[in-house]
Amino acid sequence: MNTLLKIRNADDVGAAVRQVRKSQQITQADLALIVGKSHVLMRDIEKGKGTVSLATVLQVLQELGIQLYMDLPEK
Image (spheres, rainbow, N blue to C red):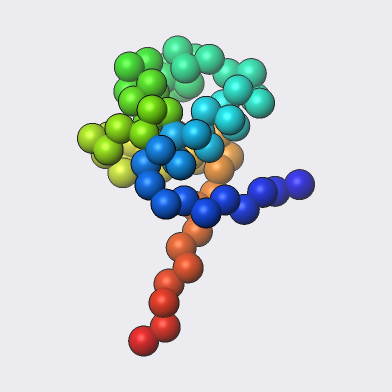
């Protein structure tokens, strides 16, 4: 069953990444190897640091099977 999560800030994204990563029994180091980034960067994502590029966050989300949707306002 999928869970919808309202994302308000980088901390929310980080918490979701951490929760899914742990549920899949993947370490930060293993995830870093899979996406070709450093484990420090994985830690920064999970801590909600806003200095991580959007492209990197999207790559991590894709690897974990997390889908991102946007609710766009009408005109």
